[in-house]
Amino acid sequence: MRDERYYGIDVGGTSVKIGLFEGGRLTKKWSVPTDISDGGSHILQDIAASLPGPADGAALAVPGAVLPDGTVNRCVNLNWGVCRPGEDFTALTGIPCRVLNDANAAALGEQRMGGGSGYESVLFVALGTGVGAGIVLDGKVRAGAHGAAGELGHLCWDPEDAAAPCTCGRQGCLEQYCSATGIVRLAAQAGIEGLTCKQLVDGAAAGDARLEAVVDQACDVLGWGIAGACAAVDPETVVLGGGVAQAGEYFRAKVQAAFDRYAFHACVGTRIRLATLGSDAGMIGAAIFAQG
Ligand SMILES: [Zn+2]
Image (cartoon, rainbow, N blue to C red):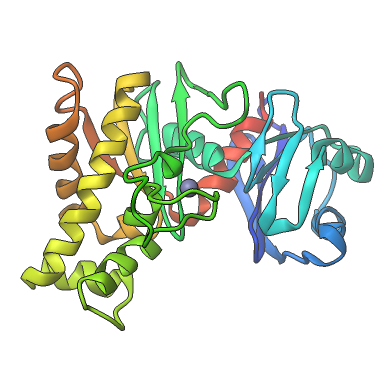
C-alpha cells in the first residue's frame, strides 16, 4: 500500500491536469492540452503518452454525467458521445481505470484533503462558468442512479425568466443567476456593463451599493439552492469552490445568510466553508477515487 502509485486525471475542455500520487502523496503534476478534434478521439492517447510509467490504478474526472457502471453519457466540451473511456484508457496503458464526474471528483478531493476535511458528509458547490456540485456521504462520493446527483446548477429558480436561457435547454436555471457568467448577466440587467465577475464582487465588498444589490441577488438564489440540497442529503458541512468563491469571506457570509433564510430549521446554521484546493481539487479527488 505504501508504495502504490495512482494517477488522478482531470479532463477539462482546454487542458488535462494529471497528478501522480505515490504512497498517498502527490509527487508530480503536469498538464496536457485537450485536443477535441476528431470527436475527442486523441484525448486519451495524449494523456497516455504523457505518463511517466505504470501504476496500480487511475481515475478520469470528466465534465459529463457518469453512470454507476462507468459509462459516460456525453461530454459536450470534449466532443464525446456515450462512451466508456475507462476501458479505452486501460486498453491503451494497461492501468486499471475508474471514471467519475469532475464536480464529484472535486467534492471528494475537498472532503478528504481540502475545505471539508474532517467531515464524512459534504455538499460541494463550484461556481465557475456554470455551477457544478457533488455530494460525499459517509466518505463516499454519491453519483446517483443517472449520474445526476448534485446537479444544483439546473434547479429551476424562475421558469418564466426568458432573459435567462440555459445550456440545458430550459430557462431560469440556478446557474444563470449565480455562476460567474450569471452574476455578470445580472449586472448587465441592472445596467452595469464591462465588469468581470471578480470586479463586481470586489466592488460590492468595497461598498458599492449597486454592485452589492447584484451580489445579494446571486447569493439569494444560491442560498435557496443549497438549502434545497441540504433538505435532501443533510450534510455536515457545505464547501464552496470555483473562481467566484475565491472572493472569500465576504461572499461566503452572504451565501450563509441566504442559506439560513431558506433552510429547514434543523439545517439552519450548517456551516458553509470555502474550498482550499483550487483547480487541483478534481485531480486530487480522481486520485483518491482511483484507490477505490
Ligand atoms: Zn439549466
